[in-house]
Length: 180
Image (tube, rainbow, N blue to C red; front, side):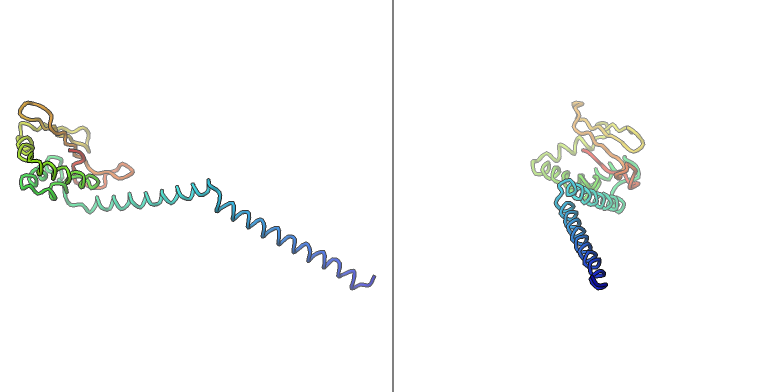
């Protein structure tokens, strides 16, 4: 055997080993990629992560909307009076702006239904009588007004609060109606 044959064998073995090693790495990478993209648990985690990010973005946008909102009073009583003034004028759009943002559309529909049904004056008669209104603080950020009719029957339970963010901290200094 000559020297060139002796050096050629280790080179051939090295090349063969290099090719096999490269193929093993490529197969391993393909398997990892397949596992990563087609694993149902990983897909669930990715989807959950995306949903969590969208939820966080939504909550941040809602917090900004609450901070920009100029409708409401510095006290719950002031908010209620502003709300009543808008109702006296039958300005449903303005009246519902005193509700928390998430409830404005719902109450706009409700007040429109009351108006269309011919019950507006009856509602206003109960709401405008001071003797029919009893308000109290349930805590420092929550106030409730119980409105009764002339028979003493409860006709409305109005919850007024300071809007809170996802961390339950106030996002505004204005009081807003949460429930009617």
